[in-house]
Image (cartoon, rainbow, N blue to C red; front, side, top):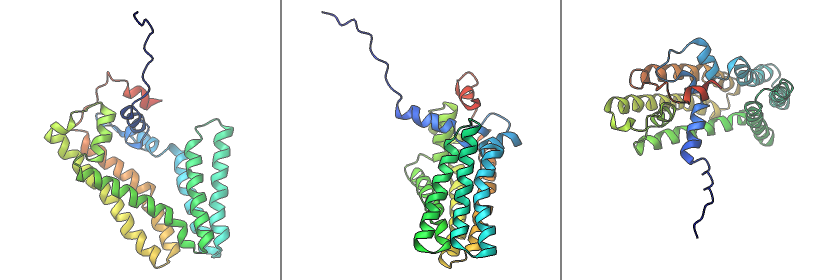
Length: 242
C-alpha cells in the first residue's frame, strides 16, 4: 500500500538560523554592493534609540561615580535607566529584546560590583565578552574560515567565496581588523581594571565602544565592497529592510 501522505516541511536548518542572525546584524546594514550612508550606519548601531540605550547607562555610571564615589548609586542608576528603556519600548510597541539584553548586561555587571564591593568589577562582563569575541575570531582564522567571510557570505548568498582568492584575501584582512578592535579594547581596559582606575576604565569603555564599533563597520564595508556583489534578486534585501 502506497503512502499518500504529504511529507511535512522540514524545519529551519542551522545554516538558515545563521543566515537570519547575519541579516539582523550590524554588518547587514552596510552590506557590500550598496553605498553606506549615515543613516545606514546609524541603523547598524540600533538607531538613535539604540545609541542612547548603549551609551547612557555607561555615561551615567561614569558621571555619578566620579562625583560621589558611591558604588551602590553608581551601579544602580544604570539599572534603573535600563528598566526605563524596556518600559518605553513596551509602551511604544517597539522591539523589546535589545533593551532586555541591555538590562541583563547592566544588571549582571551591577550584581558583580555589588557582590565584590569593587567598582571596577562593573566592567568584568564587558571584558569577558571582548575576550570571547576575540577567541571566536582567532579560531575562525585558525580553521581558515574567517568570520567576516562567513557573515558576508550569508548576507550575499555567496557560498563559494573561499574559492575566490580576492574575496578570501579581503575577508581575511577584515577579520584581522576586528581582531585588532578587540585587542585594542583589551589592551586598554585590562590594565585599567587591574589597577582599579575605575573612572578611566569607564571613559575608555565609552570611547572604545560605539564609536570604535561604527568605525570598524565602515572599514569592513570599504574592504568588502569591491570583492562582493549583492545579488539583488535574492530576498536578503527584503529581510534586511524589515
